[in-house]
Image (cartoon, rainbow, N blue to C red):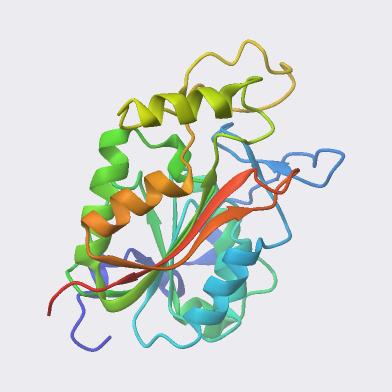
Length: 260
């Protein structure tokens, strides 16, 4: 940390006057406990997915900061802070970051290790090369365009130290909200050479009460593998992770093996 430009990490939570940070009221939870995110693009959950839990465990081993992309209300960020990690909490909504910094679970010591970074990854975000120990992106990358997916891997390779790790969860072509037969059509297009065959922009078939946003780029393990190895990432774990069904999400744990 001593050689890093801390201003690049974001706003240091310990520098904030909490009395001047707005109080954020969360939306009412859905019947299953999920809470709509402030961007209206979907829902946040209180319970950590298996890959997110693995990230928090890994973060405790990092001497460098770790980045939590699309933190929403900060469940993963708080869990990592409680393990002693230095965490950069990122979200597109300032309200999410305001909520996190005032969470009652946080101590002054936690805030000493917390940075807040508003912006859209990857296009609004830049960190110093070799400044991050790990990156967590859960249920975020399916909002990326194909170009943004590719830029994300390129930038992550630069930001992470060698042997730094990405923990990734993104919607699969078999997610419960995809149209009937979508997975089969995805596989057909993939075999035909379509680079990103999982893009959905028409959600007229979805219950209007569900918050989905207007775009989804579903990706399967084959696609993640392709983009990861192009950028010198070693595949530590890759497969499907349980959501409503066993195969709703594609997950990956990827180790940066760039040359030093």
